[in-house]
Length: 134
Ligand code: FES
Image (cartoon, rainbow, N blue to C red; front, side):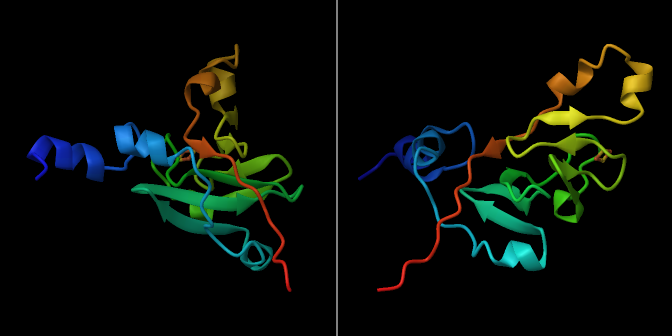
């Protein structure tokens, strides 16, 4: 029989947990990619993380933290652009890896433009695979 501590180690899969770290080494089917042609964002909850899947205007897929780190707006309402997903509230933009690549107005207050380097969010690689028929 497992101890309470062993049970917690084996059953918690969130980001930063031992099992979460292990399970994040594998691929998971998360959505029919065709859905993103109808609507470019989709909320995904995977391994205890709330994420948003999106297709940018180049056709690249991204899977990033669902909530903007600025004021926690749901990025499922984000605006897809050529190089990422823009938050609809104050306009911070994130690329498919979760890197913050633009912060309108912040750059006028902090002209060195380095603040955005501290504002990245979780991002996971995504592959789009065609369905094979036999
Ligand atoms: S809440 Fe996203 S940029 Fe402010």
